[in-house]
Image (cartoon, rainbow, N blue to C red):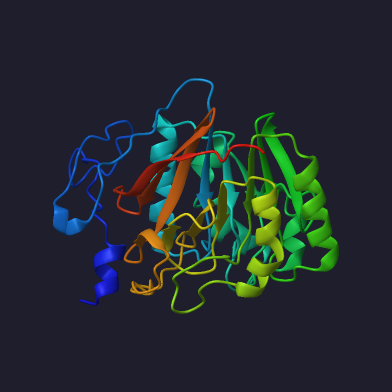
Length: 305
């Protein structure tokens, strides 16, 4: 087994499952530790407080495969205990054809329990996505390739179209960041500014363009996809970057353990992320297809200057 697997497979049994036959993730434990050989810190439980803002992140998912459906069932299982309101989609929402039956097979059916429960999905577009997806109502893009929304006064999301980052969009993004008064400004888009992926890796040109804006606007977290695994970076100039390109496609063994960027990663199974914002703290759990917690932690919001 290559060394990158030792970093990527980071103790998937961090939360105990009730049985092999019942794969429901038990949100709220968080005291179980694993052996030092697994390089896993104690799991941080989601507070699951009443009135806090809760959301999920999913990317590179639209395959229609059995594995995608299995991860969708995990998302529904977690939602039964942890009522996240929204799912942020970081691109490559559908692979292959995009007929009405494809939207049904690759999106509506895998996440039907969530859609029926009123969970709203907010999409950004990846390089495999037709631009016309912006008109698909369940993606809540309102016909826009890039947009912003705030679920409450303290949180504002910014969806970017990172395949074709035209100057008009970059100017819009800079202006929206500057005028936002939300404490949590959270961009999400497809191409990662920082990634240890051997297939794609960091998008240096995009980083040069928008990272100065993120730093100037006191952004604390960024969510992306594109590389087909899960990764949380070590803070880069104070910002934590997540790659959540593990919703339906997996590029096994693709995390480069020599990059120096990875804080935690998973390139051996599909995964999604759930998070809870309470004041200046964002608590997250990353949950695999089998219901194990692959990563968890708390991010403190960068202070506003």
